[in-house]
Length: 85
Image (cartoon, rainbow, N blue to C red; front, side, top):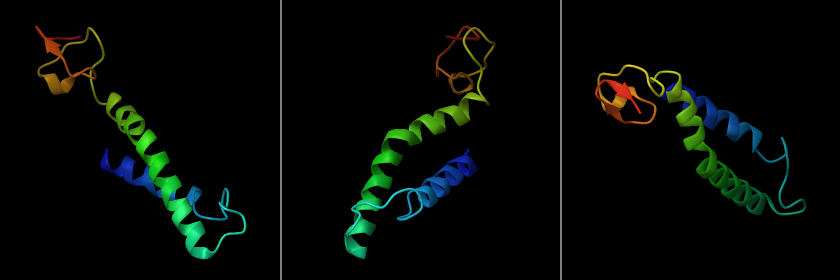
């Protein structure tokens, strides 16, 4: 899971590097462009990292109605009577 998050962060960094996908603001100084892209990276990371993390965990956890042994085995986090809710 940590490797997937590292790969996601690296891909996001490369894609949001100034000049690769976009350059904001178009005629700004190097410092202004770097700070702007840093903020864009932080905002995109904030709103997407939980989705990527959840998607990486879903492949390793039991779904609703499946047999479980503890609360950590279920994608929902709730194991009642040996079944995921």
